[in-house]
Length: 230
Image 1: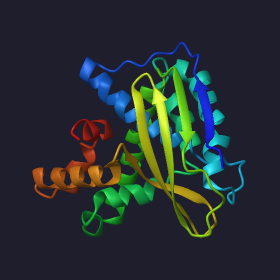
Image 2: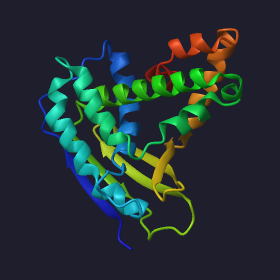
Image 3: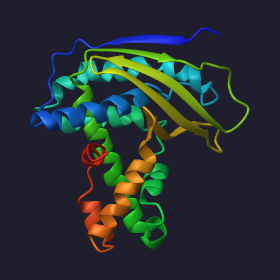
Image 4: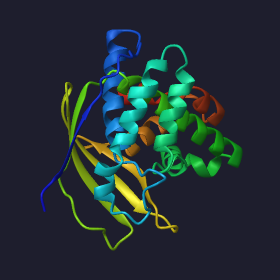
């Protein structure tokens, strides 16, 4: 079967302000992998039974439209832009599952309120970091390199190549099918780096640095900082 290929071109005049050259690099690096993940999201109007390879190609236009129409609000009304991006990501990214995985063994020691707080903080920071970085992207060439039919199992890895002005990035998405038959994104491996494990290691380090104070770790969490430290 031929590879599924899509070309995405953003013509938005909006700009993202990330302080400092290093900060801009971090935002672009982080935004690249999460934007690639966002391109495979499942829109509410798409059948939950759709094969996960085809849905990567089929729904990407929705995100691109949000960037074009809402990206201009980044400086004047960033929350409006972030909310628009979050609505696109929400149907497929299992933020609660990912956040609990990032907490690792500390999730069992946390109270339900702390787990919920971290899930909310993790999601908000992840979406905002992505939205800021992707607002300035020009062209993205995205190609699924292992297209196939709908898998019979409940877990699949979708392999993708993303070409941008930053260069070539190889991405592997882990998706699982939940009890409702919906495919959910639970992890991303970027150029061989398992981001779920990276975040989990950073959370553990933060816990040690804060003498096991989960509330302090949650309050100080920043996904961009975690990727920068990788």
